[in-house]
Image (cartoon, rainbow, N blue to C red):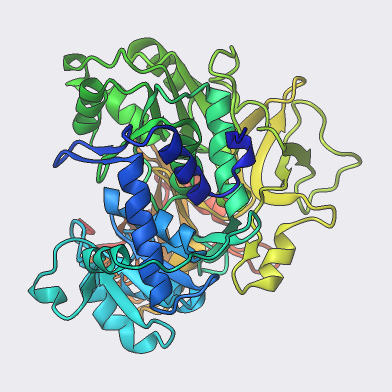
Length: 537
């Protein structure tokens, strides 16, 4: 008898769910009352896979996907998986320059996209950069065609073409590449973590098993579908258990609470920013959230007191702190939702994941850190990424000789083996509301501004977002904060644009000539840095 543990691809998991409960609701987007049963989802994914195969796409080809959370996203995700193609989810905040890099670096042959989302005109960005994308052969619009997308095929066109096809689909193996999910790189450019079918499917199954999720559960999530926490954990977890996924296009505290109430959601996946937004919202008491049973909260700024308060007053009694990263196929540790330590620690590793604490690089240590001692969090698992796409040197440097993944995060282990996050990071990274931001990328942009001579980007604490991005610059007297903000906004996603620009006559340097960011952060917190003139609002 086939069990979920035997199923190692997300397409096979969807087939299994269709056979088990074809008419059960798999996907539910309350806005517009859009639903998919497992049977409908499987039919649409199969049609798309056949249409793509008929167009000459072959296993291993990369196909990018740029869209907000919506049922069609999940159809494309499963259609690509069924055809053996490698999905390249794109951050919906990306602007033209960032989109160009991801499409070029991945050598994507096709792009599925919505025309726009909020203030980000995806189609305009594509037209701005398409002449520099020699590998990109075709763009397909998700949603109804408009005058702006005239001449482009739509997802509906592809589904109709596939419905009339009987093309045999390729066999897909557990170790085949499933997705390339981009994480920001310390060099200033994102790196594409290549994940396997087995890793993606296992992460969702193992996490949901640890949480006790079943086919009777209703899962809500604030995580965008381009994130590994959605792609590798939430959606495969729902397929593994048969739980219903209830989605929103984007997070809104009131709308999320309304959905939890109306759909009687039992599981909620969020980050500290969104948990705090709902907990402190003045309208929270209008909603009945008592159906919630378990949930996860991940992020370096997770506050145990916040989780304890959410458990008591949402109420969401089984909320837990979790830890993971894309290179490990998302989550690596997760507590039992009844464990007393679930607020203060990120719990023990999932099955087939190992965690150890290693000496921090550059610091002398006579022995590996013991229980309660700080060091670098390192992970080992068969479900780790296959490597960074087309970046062999970076891939090699990410792992130790004995196969441990260097996370760059600082933490410790309790005597019982639970992971405790310190909040510090060896890698130069800012986490703003759950989004990973690498200062090197922003510094690279600022250094291209003609009025900037030196730039240092770093994070400062923020009650709502955990951290926000600020920049210190040595610049010409005529340069204003408004100019630098606009310059960055044209080239970067808005969440990466510094909220404050400080001006200095010279940067504080180490003996080796490196900028002392720790000193800049301390001076910023103490109000000892001068803000650059000109509003950034």
